[in-house]
Length: 149
Image (cartoon, rainbow, N blue to C red; front, side, top):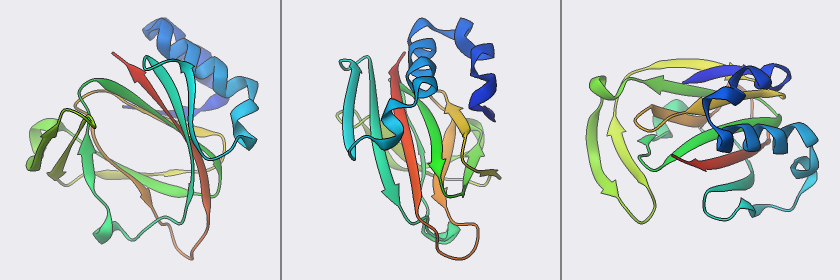
């Protein structure tokens, strides 16, 4: 997992050409006002999901992990908590869904606050719980870029 501000995203470009492309798309800002839904960047190799929602209480959150995609989650507006747990410390509660590339878990982990301009990179097998509220209801606008490994 990586936790940082978009202003420092160039530090992570050497990790993967596809991840570098995803950061470049976030840097140009065009998706910030884009319609909700899927936006292809490089077909199924790199695509963005523009979302808005009200974060939920931690007890209603779901721990998840992926195998075929890296999640780059970028907060545009609002604030939320995102949790992270090690794969080794999680217990599968729903088997891996190959079509949708996710598995659900019971886990215990650390939560970090994400404000506008911040991002998280969750690599395959990083068990994570996004979209958790911090306090009073607030609408979050976020871009999740799926990057094929």
